Image (tube, rainbow, N blue to C red; front, side):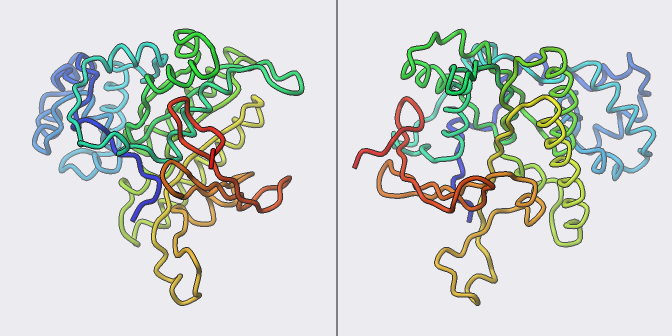
Length: 321
């Protein structure tokens, strides 16, 4: 029941072949014993990337692995794998290894939130009103929906150089909610290292991995606690380094909405914690054809309002009725 969900156009292959197929036996060089490596293999974790894709909590559930051992394993794996950030240009080169299977429909992937994220990757680089100089962007991708080639099309629309645009976007894929939080450590360090250069941090989408890592009502309290920690971190990073933060989220059916006769019985996932942490909230929904409707739900400086926009080859644009 998700709205604005982008579907990937290829099977679930990872394109980072070199790092993906680093054998788990390499952990021996970093102080992890054979018996513990065997325990990981027994639950199907056979690569270094596999460890990165598994939360600490899940590893602690492996028989014979204590929290201390899990921390040591994670630490060793991190030594063998980069933090995960590439420029969009480097990621574009890696994506050349991906092959495509047609759905039979040219329009199949056209939704709103990820297209908006891609457009902002370009427009945030352009000088603007009030002496805004433009700057670099960091993009954290949780659903494998980032497509550097879209940035080329959007760059064409604004008459800016492809390679320069791609070089100014730092990209990383997050595999677990823990990994997502760890990437923010890198983000803060980067903002400090290149003070005043970065202007925007994008997370598309913020809740996806939390939904996977914490399933069921019994884990809801822990999920909301971890989410609150991440949002607090984002707010601090934003204020400390004067960087805008843009996060996307999904909508889901609201079981209680039928009792209150709401016109649109959907609600954003993540609950009140996510709502309160956001300065301005915008809801996107599909209109006719290429048209989408954006509604301002909550903003300290703008009244509730709706605007119609279109998804074009050059990204998000004004609707032409």
